[in-house]
Image (cartoon, rainbow, N blue to C red; front, side, top):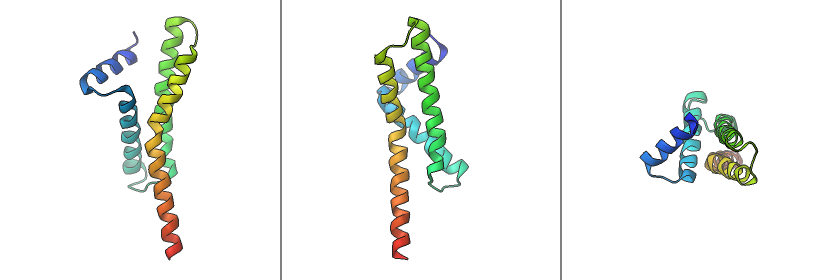
Length: 110
């Protein structure tokens, strides 16, 4: 088992959360860190970039482990990675869209 896979196993056992739930939490943590540190509290689409990068890196590591351990990619692993990408990025995207809609509504009122 790779160090990354072992770290995931430990995190899941400590937090006692589902893997899907952990993906959602990771996405939100990375997103809000980007908002606070990068954009100084401003919610913008650019804040989704670190979320996409982290989500992609996690899935690349998962797929690499699957390939190394089996010698080929499995369709099940690929669909699981797509599922995980959606779980990781879903709520940050929703937050950005809602912020954008709020800005549009405020612009119309002005």
